[in-house]
Length: 254
Image 1 (tube, helix red, strand yellow):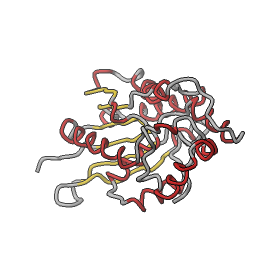
Image 2 (cartoon, rainbow, N blue to C red):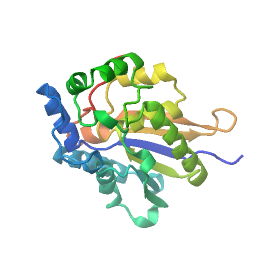
Image 3 (cartoon, rainbow, N blue to C red):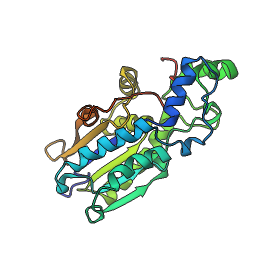
Image 4 (cartoon, rainbow, N blue to C red):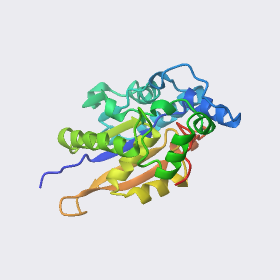
């Protein structure tokens, strides 16, 4: 029977960004707004984020060539593209079947809440703050933005592409915290309660690896089996600090 899935999928959150640093500073100061001038799409890696990305690239490069990713898909946001580039610049392009920036892997869109801290949301949009608390992050859609369900819908399309074009290949996806969690929701067949429990357990560390390998013995046609979840050994082994800051203010717990 023909294999539907890639041989392996790695999900990676980008390295620490300047936006992560600015958000932490704004929250610590109880500020209303995150002090960063760039559009979210243009926010680059921090110096530490570059170190994290370099350590992750070394981990992949230590694999035999026949085990490394041969397809790299990444968010078009600068911080994700830079994270992927640390690996791509060291790889032999003959090893790579495809490299694509895919807009469907972009960060969750925050609409009118963009660059606001939790305190800022409560002060400037008290009705939305209350609605966000009542509905919960899975279904809450800010004006001009997306809910987790909206993100999941576009990621279903990504998986359709992956299964159609890269069955049997080794696919690396570099994106964002919400993207990693929403892929987990799909690949591990979770429900709302299960993925929110994982989210409450802790943030996805920068440059951490979550991976799945195809197992032909699972189900009738084989399935992807979890291998790694938020794996940070590539950073720890090189003495690179592990960070797990949020990309956006924390939603009130549902």
